[in-house]
Image (cartoon, rainbow, N blue to C red; front, side, top):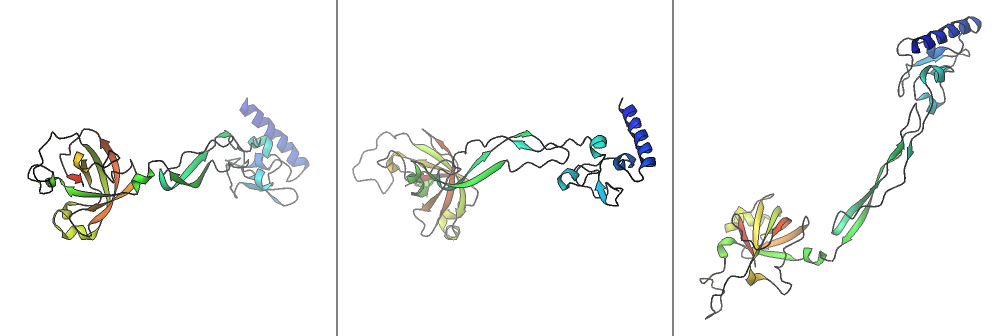
Length: 255
C-alpha cells in the first residue's frame, strides 16, 4: 500500500512538474533520503521562485519547509509537553549548606521538528538545620586503642575499685583530612587519608548526653584531634555506628 501511494504521488508530481516547472514536488524528487531528521542543510531543494526550502524535520521551526514536506515526510508537528513540577526533595545536607532538587516528566515528546522539551530538573540551595546538628560542631578527641583504661591506667583515681566494664559502642569513620603534624609524631603516622578507622566510646568517656563527644553524624564531615599529639588534627565522615561493640582493628578511643 505504501509503495502504491508513493508511486501515485510521484506520478502526480511528474504531471505537476510538466505543468509547473520547478513546482511543489521538491521532497518527492529528492533521492535517498527523501526526508531527513533534525537539521540538515543538505536536505534541501529550490522552489519555483528560486528560494531554498528544506525537507528536514527542523524546517518547521525555521519555517522554510518545501511545499510537499507534509505529504512526503509526515510533517505533523508535535511540540514537547511536560507535566507539572514535582515536590522539592529534602535538603542534601542535614547540617549546613546543601541543595534540593525537583523534576517533571515528559507527557508528549517533540516530533517532526517541534519545540524541544524545557528543563526537566531544577536545583536550588538550602541550609540544613537538623536538631542533631549541634553534635556535628563538636571536635572529637582520640587516642589509640593501646591507651585502653584498665587497672594500670595512671588516670585512675587512687584506691578505686575495678567494676564490671559497661557496654561501649563503636563508630567507624573514613578519614578525609589528616594534618601534616600527625605524620611526624608517634602513632599519628598511622593515620592516613581515606583510611577507615574504628573509634570506641567507652563508659569512662561518656558525657551527660549519654554519648562520647564528637561521635558525629552519619554521612557528615566532622572534626577530630589527637589528644596526645599537639597539632595533629583533621576531619572524617561517619560511615557506621554499632551498639555494644568493641573495636578490634585500627582501634582508637574517644577521650
